Length: 135
Image (cartoon, rainbow, N blue to C red):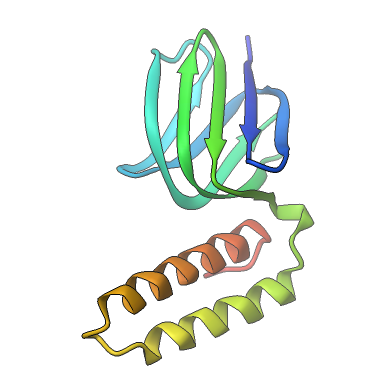
């Protein structure tokens, strides 16, 4: 038995297919989902979702949201998502390095700036990881 997995962002459906297994970046850590999983509603963090339709894993960068698991259906509603294979790894690496440098330059007493720089860094890191680069 398999799971029906849907990843829906505001502008598009990023994934809508059957899968054997899903690993989600929940706000409390990595969360593995197999068929027969108990009903669940969880918040998702910025990070990389892994989905295994058959043998090979597919990486999808998620920009935070929610996931619901019920009756072997996993519905993932996110602020943004991008399949790893659609991300240019060199461009993602450059964006990651730029976000890292920007985060280091923000004065520690600028709370809003620190929060925004960290969010940009986390998004850039998720994209780089989904593209296959190590970060």
